[in-house]
Image 1: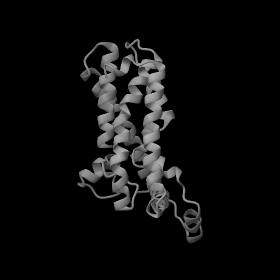
Image 2: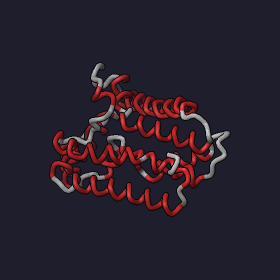
Image 3: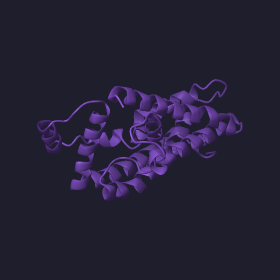
Image 4: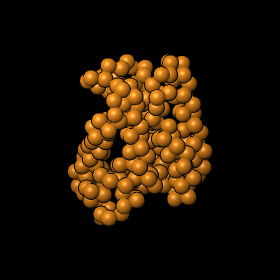
Length: 211
């Protein structure tokens, strides 16, 4: 992370573009297959039903005719890779009280930390194909199936990714490098924010879905 915080705007942009291209290639490789297209349909149905809705036969047929490819970016922890999220994280790091870093160094930290999120998608793509599902195989609910499916604890664990936690640790290391302080001072707040957002999303889905 020491090198990342000293990158200029051009180097940050080049790194970011490279990561997005790798992600796009992984997505294209999956979504170009019948399995991938069916997976986005199934994911859309799963989300609608989780929110208390239903998908009738005509709606399902329409989804199969025009698969909702945007569901790929909205599932499996991939939303963290969206440019708007990267920019928001960078803005948050730049505005963190007491750090005194500018936006470009903060963006560099956010971009370089997202390398592990791209790695997750590269590793997960063949697993999505084999499992015929866009659900992340790296969330805590999949790795620690201790709670009933649909329960609030299971939903919370299902929104927390192993690679997401790794991403948070890299953000903490970047913050420490920018501020010249120890990374552990940033780990707690950042992990708390990540888990807190995951919990809010999980509880909102549970309440909306009546489950």
